[in-house]
Image (cartoon, rainbow, N blue to C red; front, side):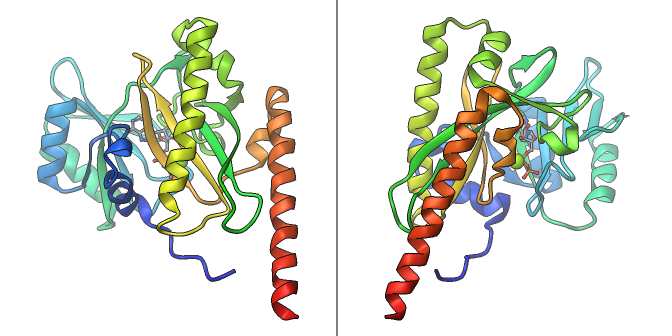
Length: 264
Ligand SMILES: Nc1ncnc2c1ncn2[C@@H]1O[C@H](COP(=O)(O)OP(=O)(O)O)[C@@H](O)[C@H]1O
Ligand SMILES: [Mg+2]
């Protein structure tokens, strides 16, 4: 296999997805973090996420919102929130944390919650051989830990749950509505994964999808080295976990056979 191309980071990733109107409609509005964009986005959406372009595992993420008195509240991952009288003060605080690094500011999604905690859905896609067709391998819900603005399980001490159960609890949906959404997410996972082939033929992709309080689907991000272990954490996802491990092995053998043939 050739070398891996560099990770795009959140800003290039957004632009790459946004090129396709069929994908763009699932993306929260996203801008480079500048004072002007931040001020504009906060007035428009009243709640935004500020994220390091090169971040992962939830690190460095902030949620910013306007409270009832139009003060500005900034909350980092699992930490205590800070309230500021105006945007200038809030931006000064953000800039101290940012330390000159590139960030994005993104429309905040009011995520559906289980027991008051936000959830998002990991959709796992795999190939069984280099360049082979994309296959859907499983999905699960990640529930944020207490007092967390991110659902990343390690950082927020969150938990995983069956998607079916999570959606029913969060949105009180019927069986039909839930299974329609699950089918939709599988189709989207396939479409989104194919979109990446023009950048690099990845072996696995894990999409993080938010479902908001109105049941609308939002694509939050894509992971090129998605965790397998996440699927082993919950009994309901064990069959998906086995499928993921199995496909990983099939790919491994296909790759070995290919390099053996190449050597002959
Ligand atoms: N625009 C947003 N609105 C609401 N929640 C968000 C938003 N962006 C991120 N989050 C929450 O933060 C988590 C981490 O964000 P993500 O963009 O995946 O960064 P990382 O690469 O650090 O995992 C998401 O899984 C989600 O729970
Ligand atoms: Mg993520």
